[in-house]
Image (tube, rainbow, N blue to C red; front, side, top):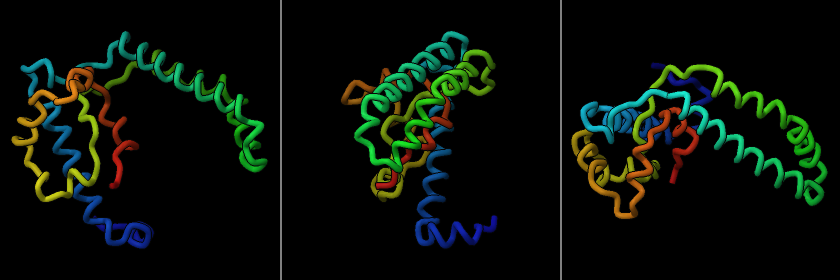
Length: 166
């Protein structure tokens, strides 16, 4: 596949790292969804109850964020305040958009979360693992107890914005 010129100019020498990150992320998602007999790793549907929970979480976070923005709007620089006021006026539009989560069926499946995942873990030669090793590591108990929270499952699409470059 030909890489667009703009991507070459903007990303340049990071393209191989980005490609490897994409490859390892795909391998990770395959591993997280591969053991259908083990309830901790079996993909699960987006049930109505889960969609309702997701909606409530998003609504609560947005409500808190908009309230904080409203409280602090006077201390914002003028050029930012104008945009902040526009955002505050969109509150009902934002919440209506969130309602689509409840009203529309989501066809994908939820898989186990991988927790903290960043480029440093993928590119470090000591940490590059094949999927079978990765699966064994994922099954091991997390030292901080967070593994049970990761069993809840979520859409792999949710991870895209949170993958960080070290």
